[in-house]
Every structure is written in structure tokens, then in C-alpha cells.
Length: 403
Image (tube, one colour):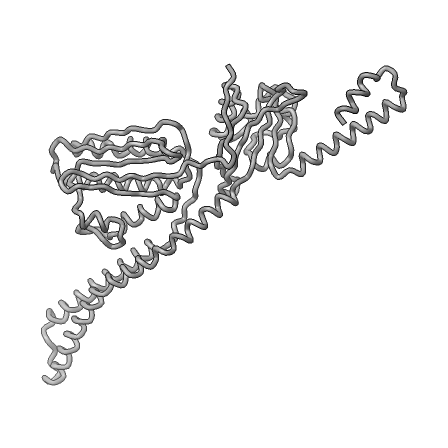
């Protein structure tokens, strides 16, 4: 068609009226065909000029991106597309691509629909070439929510194997309370039998109450064990989104630093600072960092007892496409026995501990497709290292900047 139009263009002055009308009909049909192709794509499409002003689009792109205006209202105007996108991260990405004249780039984002569900999208910017020359850019928007959800579901199915260990731990824990209840009920029964033999003369009130008090205490203990077990086995309701972990950590450290300083403990934070995002649930991620930090606080207080010298180190970096967080302290450390059982359910060294805190930390990290390891020396300190995958694109694109 393009060759045909060029040839006609060269002989335009010699064309009859009928030939011109025929040409317009052919062009209109071709244009309608191309429009139908654009509208049939399952990928959102924005065609823009070098100033990021909208030239053409397909309808589905309005379903993938949160626009503040209808695209038909900004098409052909001087409004830049990122100026009407109601998502700070996406708008910032497109603005950076314009300012640095990036012609090839791709990045993943998460958005929240009006109904409250999370959607994951990949935005790719490619050059628009016309007759061998750059004439703008093409923005492709793909919905990858289903793929992300399938990955999460597969990971959760793998974690079901851990239920065996939890069930075994639960069975072990309930033996002692049940045994104690059985013994004290037997003692009460024997006392009642003797009372019948002794003209129904009951034993001292204090004697019976003591046994009943123990039974009630053990029942409460069992109830707590059951509730903790349900907490441990219940699937984590994680709402995974692409978030910058450095921002979350920084805000959290600013929050708890005064508490550490009050105990004369120095807090040191070193961040990767790259702005890379990982798949996390922000609330659960905060729970992990807070849990490990509070454990470090207890370990440092145990060693220094209010004296100067306590230190907490939190650092993050990127290595081999992974985001790595390290939380270290110079507290009392752990014995080899404790270190070997640190993530096992119901294992605790605290008087009032449930033994499920570190189990939950482990579960959350795994829910984020991460890994967690611990290194500790008794009397010297403890270090937890967590690594999370940085989402990679299916197709590697080279980023180029024009000066």
C-alpha cells in the first residue's frame, strides 16, 4: 500500500476525479483495517511524539493505566501523557524517559483498581520509526497480573509441606498440658472415692481448688497453643505489590530509632538507594523488619544492660539480581543449639515467648519468594540476611540515552 501511494503521489496532477476518489476510498479502507488491528490487540498501545504528546492509542490501554482524563480529549493536544496518569511511579518513569531521551526501556509496576484489587503491568518504550527515521515513540502496556498470581500460587503450594513440621510440633506441645490435666483429675477422682468411703466427707476445700486451678491453667495453655497453631498454619494473606523496600525500611528505622537511643543503642542504616522495586506486602515486610529489630534490641539489652556500646546495623544492597537486607547486632548472640532451631515452630528462649515469631518471619520471607539465613556467635552478636528477587523482564532491552 505504501508503495502504491508513493507512485500515485508522483502522478497526482494527472489523476482524474474518479481516480482521486478511488484513491481516497482505498486509503480509508486501509486506515480502517489498521485501526481494527490496533483495537484487536490485547496489549495497550500509546503512540507519542518526542515531546510525549499523544498521537494515537487503542482503547484497551485505558483499562491498564489510571488516566485522569479520557485519551480522546488529549489526543492531538500539547498535554504530555504522563501529566494525566494518576500514578506517581508510572508518571515518574515516563517523565524520566522523556527528559533523558531513553528510546528503549521496560519496567514493571503495580496499580490498584477502583475495586481495591492489585494489577501488575509491564510498560515498554520503543522507538517509532517512519521511513527510516525516528519520529516518536511507542508505549506498550501489558497486563501480567495472571502470571504473577500463578507464581504466587505455586509458591504457596510448595510451602504447604511445612505444615507437617508444624503439626508435629503442635502434637508434642499439647502432650504436657494434657498429661498434667489427666494427673490432677485423677487425684480429684481419688479424693472423691475416699470421701464416699468416709461417709461422704469431702477433702479440704483448698485441696480440691488447687487441683482445679492447675487444670484451668493447663486448659488456658492448651487454648493458647491452639490459637498460636492456627496463626502459624493459616495462609498469609499477602497483597503483593511492587514497592521500593529502601523507603519502607527508612521510614521504619526513623520510627524505632528513638526507642533504641533511649537504651543507649546506636542505629546505623546503609541503603542501596537504587530505587529498584521488589514484590512485597508492605505491612508484612514492616512486620519482618520490626520483629528482627526487636529481637536485636532484646539481645543487646541482655548483654549491655543499659551501658553504652550497643549497636544495630541495617544495610541493603543489590547483587546478582537480588535485593539483600542485612540486620546485625553486637548483642548476646545465640548458642549453636538455638541457632539450629531458630526457625522451628514453638522453639523459644524467652520466658513469655510463643516460639512462633521467627516462624512467621520465615513464612513471610518465603511468601515474598525470598530466602533468609542467620549467623550468630554467643557473646558476640547475630546477623540475619534476607534476599529477595528483583523482577526481571522476559525480554532484555538496552537502555540508551541520547545526548
